[in-house]
Image 1: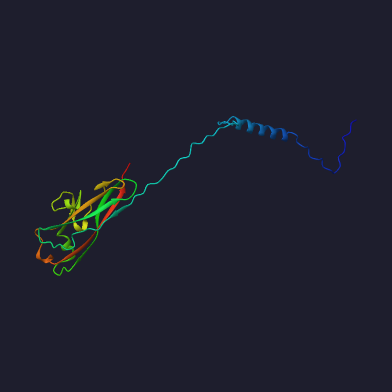
Image 2 (image 1 turned 180 degrees about the vertical axis):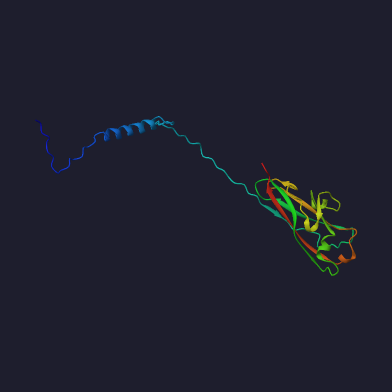
Length: 198
């Protein structure tokens, strides 16, 4: 007769599973193999080369203007005009396209008319001339009411180092009313140079 061995109150020690390490090792091998199969190169050699030294300089865009002359002592009657000149020079190192616009006006001594009424009777004309002696009334060029005068960009172009003479003509409308008589108008023209597009 066989007998079954009796067990005491002790529990048997848990068995170690020896298959864990081989499985983990197999997973690492699989991941490394997958990475080696992805795109890209893992070459250990490469090459570099350098260009010779180069220098780049930025351009300058600057202009200078002279005063608007010969208009301050003139008196206008209806239908009359008066001229004055100013010089502008491109002192930068790149070509500039020029714009001339009225940036301020002031009307004084207009006892019988509002400043708006006075400015509504004055027109401004601008032409580029070869010399101050060439400036006279009736020249063609940009024109508009004094308060809103603006040649827009590209009125004329100055290369680096070049200069020009602007001929400004101020006219009082032929049908200007008596109410604007005696008014004195001051105005400022601003010259802006913008780099010519390549």
